[in-house]
Amino acid sequence: MAGLTGRMSTVVKAKVSKLLDRAEDPGETLDYSYQKQVEQLQNVKKGIADVVTAKKRLQMQESSLQQSVVKLDTQARQAVSAGQEDLARAALERKNVAQTELQGLDGQVAELESQQEKLTDSEKKLRAKIEAFRTKKEVIKAQYSAAEAQVRISEAATGVGEQTADVGLAMQRAVDKTENMRARADAVSELEAAGTFDDITALGSGEDDIDRQLKQLSSQPAVDDELAKMKGELGQGGGDAAQISAGAGGPGPATPPPGDDGKS
Image 1 (cartoon, rainbow, N blue to C red):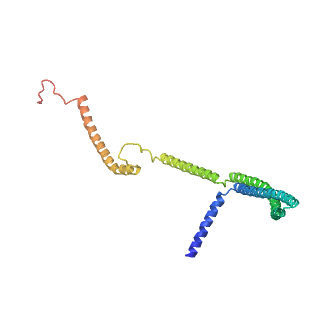
Image 2 (image 1 turned 180 degrees about the vertical axis):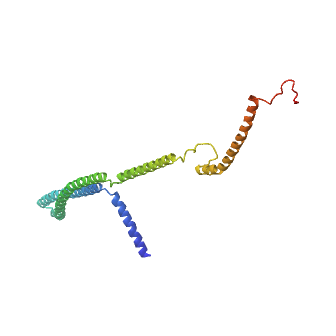
Image 3 (image 1 turned 180 degrees about the horizontal axis):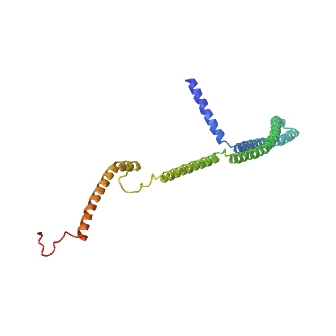
């Protein structure tokens, strides 16, 4: 089960990585990286400003303590001059406390100055690095754009691109349809020339040429018999007509002369 889970995880990661590779735009990625570096530089500058602000605040406190030390020293001297030793002692004690705080502030100010110098050096190096990255970024983007344009031109010229492939497929389908239509037209013309479609629009029983030939063969003997019969009838009728014509136009039977009763 663990092996199956690991395999599924690997397959999902591979699919996601492939999708990300297809969706990733190198120009956008470089611009995003440059933006993040600029933000980092801004954070460094903000850190430097914070260190300088803290140093200035400590220096102000240091200046205040120095004035307090001078003031307490003056007050202690005045108290000694006035014979007020206790008051002078209290002033000196406060002076010692202020001097101790002043020494601590000096160490903190020195530490902040060191941090400021380090941050300033880091800011300069980072700024130079970002500037170099910006220049290189623009060069890479220009090279990528040129390569992308070259690929599009090459694909358009060689017919490798997706859109060109679609156009090629559409053209091939059109050629195939045209060839099929031409072949069908030639077939129809050939059948029409052969007389296959002569009676295709005529009203009738729907017989084809073979049916008509078979029917003609079966009706031929009957036609021959009827023709012979008609010839016989016409021949017999011709003899009778001759006899009728002779009786009407020729001499009739001998008529006995007058007074002859037929007796000899």
